[in-house]
Length: 229
Image (tube, rainbow, N blue to C red):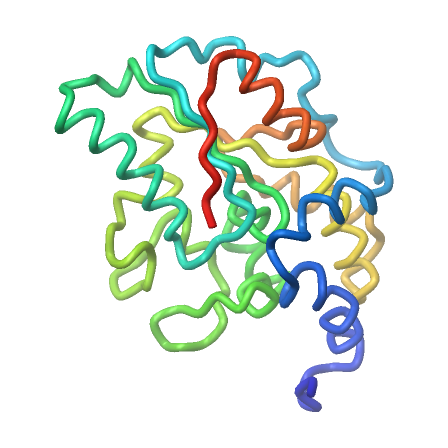
């Protein structure tokens, strides 16, 4: 049952998005997002030139398919990939290329704290902070002491992984889906929400047209594939 203390427009949004974003099966997310995301005007266009991929020429290349935040457990796998190559095989970071996908339930990881507070991402994703309340900031980017991120491995944060060379790619189809759903929940027009989100995207995150094609393009360039559940 939805909380009667939540404003009516928010209850409507939580109900509409429940099966597909906030409460739905992760395995169903990619197909639903690709099929249901209509074009939404506003903000920069996604990179269709493959610049986001062309400069990644490290000896060891892997794409991490991460459709859900899962408290940072997926990011921990990326961290361990870097650490194992470095510590066990003496491979330098410059010789490794990690691609991490942001789509479905992981899409909000690509945005600044202000967007988490404004659009209640913590509540929608069922991701709580150290106070056991829904997150109102993006702890996945830059965690604070006490945050329950990746079992305490803060060097698995988005910012830390970016410093090692990891590249995070964000799906335009998923962005359109979220923009439409947030609009239906009373957040404004879909175009305005989309522009707002893009204006507050984390540094270094790259917008790609669709994750289904981005994964294919990465594999064509020699990236191995790992699904992060």
